[in-house]
Every structure is written in structure tokens, then in C-alpha cells.
Length: 274
Image (cartoon, rainbow, N blue to C red; front, top):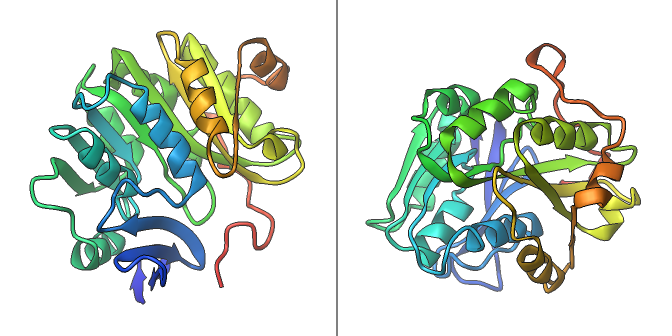
């Protein structure tokens, strides 16, 4: 247990896996890492982002990945294990959290992962154009996605950094009536030709608050492959795209920096542990 910039962080051991740890900040789960098996992804949202990474190129082909938000570096470890030779840059704002993770959950030697402390939006805007195959955005201030990572200007910055066939994947959270999630679909559809959502049916039907993965690209997304992978998970998800996604986002418009808001506060206990 340690005080970090975002509050009190705890590393909790998994009694079923000898070198696996759950990272929480202020009681909210942030990351799960198995140091012996970095391909083991405990959180369903992480598995769904991994599906996007798996489908981004042929198996084993190295990728250049920009991670906005680091936590315990679960997905950078996954990419390093499944795509050796990948070049990855991780931006994490919480310096205390970075120190805790580096001390207790160190990266493997030669991982190809560079970790820096900084603001995700600022580092994105400073990144070279057409330098990333994939951008993974998993940034939460407490339990909310910060407003400055939800706007049209931010989406355009992401599009500039991605290569022509690159993909953007973001972990978002919302519940009915989905004002935030619908605005995010509209915002990214303004910039990217192809957008989809990956989420559990109960979430998409508005029966509970939960995570949704937004995926965007200038080129056609592998929707069928993503749908097969998501449906085969322990907690099956579906891929919303095309006319169904247009109906979901109907009436929502893109948001600019001036009116952008963070994701809604989750109902009490939604993402808490202990």
C-alpha cells in the first residue's frame, strides 16, 4: 500500500496465481498483472482491447503502439509477449504509481516498452505524425475518463498520429441513457470513417453501467473477427457497428474542447474492491 498522486494505491496478491497482482487506486481496480504469464488478462475490458491488438496485423508482426494511460502496464506486457520486437510508448500521469509499478512489477528486460510520466493529451499532440499502428487509450481520473480526452480536437490529434491503416481503441464507461458514450461515437465518427463498440449486451441494452471499447480507423475494421473473439470470452460481448451503431448514436453530435465533459461517475460500488 502506498500513497500515489491519485490517492492510495494497493497491490493485492492473487492467491490462485503465484506472481499475479491486482492494482487498485482508491479502491477501484486499475490493473491486473501476472508476471509469469503476461498473456493472461483478467479484466474483460483488457481482453477486448487485446482482441483489437491481435487483429491489427498478422500474428507475431511487431507493432508500434502508443498507450495513453499505463496503470500496471498490463497491455504493454501483453503486446511485448505476443508481438516480440514491438516498439511501445506508455504515457502515465501518476508519477507515484509509475514508481510503485517499476519497483514491484518490473518489466522484463528487453521488453521494448518506454514509460514516461506526462499528460496523455499533451504527449499525443507532441507525438510524430503517422508514427503509431495502434493507440490504446485507457485513462481514468478516479473512475472517470477526463474531459480533455473526449473531444473532437483530441480525436483529430489521435488521427494525425496513427498511420493510414492504424487503429484507435479506448476504454470508456457509461450507462443508460448513454449521453457520454453516444457523444463519443459521434465525435470519433466525425474524424474516422469506421467506428465500432465492443461491450456486453446488458451494458448496450442499458441494464447496467459498464465498460465499452470504442474502436476507430480510417480503413475498414475486422468486425467479424472482433465479434468472434468477443463472443468467445467468459463474459461474451458483441460488436455494435454500421446501421445499429448509427441508431445507437442518433441525435448525438461531436463535442469540442469547450463543451467536453468526462465520463459519468459510476454508481456506487460499480468498480470498487473491498
